[in-house]
Length: 376
Image (cartoon, rainbow, N blue to C red; front, top):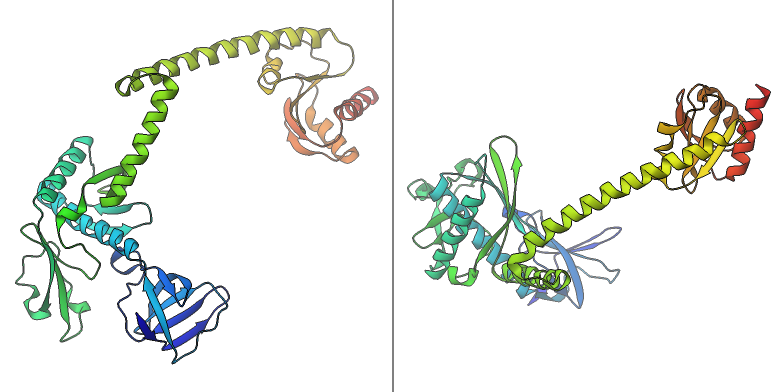
């Protein structure tokens, strides 16, 4: 479409190009995503309503002048996707209202999924199956979706799923009512398809508690649902190939793998325990007031359980620049205070255990502590 620029607002990141009237849908109105498209060859990334004008945000330094005409092209495939999700929400909310007497308290379309918040404290798997089947049956009915305009005076006489707050309506203004023939009627200003047959099917992705009496449902419908199932199918095929099993065998295969992993971890823990005893014996037999060991972190952390000497400090490297320090009777707080004055170290120590973080070589750290202990 060709349209005249009414205003231009320059910002640090975006230029807002504004028009007195057009059919672009702003972001956020009615919980809906806004339009996207191209203006004079430049992509616009956001649509908003400002002072009764519609403005598009353009991420460019290209000049736009007030009074000039521009060519505006809307991304129709995106618009159709939004219309599918929005109409699916109407049908989903109507079904939940009829089946569970639950009201929809909130709605939002996102780029990958949509959400509704309903006043139902729990939404079980059984509810999910009922809703999805009901939705599919209504799609098969190919019910017409259409809009009607009513003056505010007649709104209260309509059988709407949700009442309209007349205090928010200007005098003389007409209200747009969206109908799904025979099942739903509600005031709405968003985008919608013409027939429920265009919705395909609905998939509830997950649910989550929102406060004590509310539940949020995540869903996709139409082409989004098809893409979701294609993605899941591709992932399932990959799992089948990796596990060399059939679809129905996946749960048992994964459970068996989980049990095997737990057994491996138990064996690994026992092995590390045995190694810790072995290393602790060597440490106990060494000479010196400060004794050092470089081994795996899980082994180092077990060694204090098997150290029997009470007159030396044990240091073990647990990461590249992090050391565990331990002693049964020597006060490590005093040692840490000393080495912090002498060397570039961080960390902290309690009376018997602590951590030292430093980039200095381990030998220098051990020698410094050994020297301090001998002087003490």
